[in-house]
Amino acid sequence: MQQPPPPARRRPDWPGIVVVAFILVAAGTLVFNIELNMRAAGMTPGYGFLAQTAGFDLNESLTAYRADDTYAQAILAGLVNTIVLAAAALVLATVLGVLMALVSVSSSPPGRALALVYVEVFRNLPKILVLLVLYVVAVQGLPPVREALSLGPVHLSNRSLYLPMIEPRRAQLWLLLPVAACALGSAWIWMRARRVKRDTGREWPVAPLIVGTMLVGPALFAWAAQIPLPVSVPRLERFDYVGGARMSVQFVVVLVTLGIYHGAQIAEVVRGGILAIPSGQVDAARSLGLSPRQATRFVVLPQVLRIVIPPMINQYVNLIKNTSIAIAVGYSDLMSVSSTIINQTFRPLEIMLVTMALYLALCLIASTALNRLNDALRARFGSNAA
Picture 1: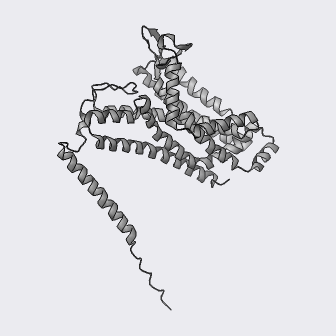
Picture 2: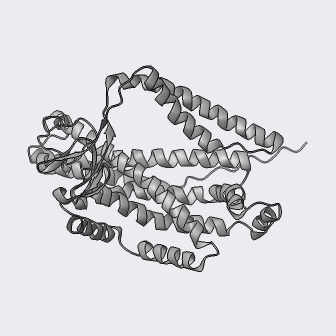
Picture 3: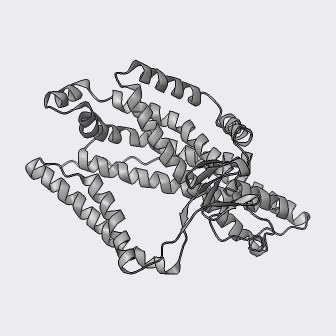
């Protein structure tokens, strides 16, 4: 019996090895020179300065940050502000983008024209220009605090948006129990509704049932347990409103800018996904008696979701990174806090490395979550191909 020939020896990839070695040597030389220059300037590389007192305030902070806190706590406050801004902008951009994509393929000529103008205008303008224009319009066009526009307990001025808010109390932590129980109940309702639809074809009003469960359950528990839920309403006192919650005009302007700018990008992504669905599937759905809204909801959108998630990952990651433009209007996000710390400590290298690592972590978390969702949809419904 003839023996098989021995496997060919794999030759080393010398060009690749040379390139990797060159990159490593260049990076090592750069780090060595930076350390030498810092030591020559009397600066010892390290992050011990993060434990020092920051000594500056933030114009807006969702954490209990104060000027006598450390630089590390200031960075944490800026990170939380960035996360909240990115989350709100993701929701706004997604809702606006999906709505405009549906309008762009509708049968209404004025609607299609409106969607076309919206997409082409905001997709072809620099986002920083949009931000600055909206900020100037908000500061100069909105009235001062004493003449704020009021709609019931909601007030809007060129300084902030003032909203009523439930004042936090320690006893309110008990509400986590009914919220968790109602969340489990909502999950059961959703699974039961799917089973009923599969077996009988009947549809349950899932959305009203879940919303009612999540609202009524904790409310009844709070009433029965006499948990205080005091509502703080903003009221004008001398030069500003006190009480309630407020969103600075900087936050609102950055939120609107990111929402409408990336909404235009998302609209094009979703429109491409809709056009990728064969028109025969919509005609078949209509022939079965489905209304246009039902055909969109049950036939078009589930398939579009599988198609658009991969390109949407890029849009979401770009939006998270673009929150850094908030520094242009003075919103205390991660980039703004980092810039202030650099000006005070003269530690640009260390702070920029921390800032890069935090932005990288946020983007990796978002992309990983969406990739997991995409894998789950592919496993359940098959390929993304229409």
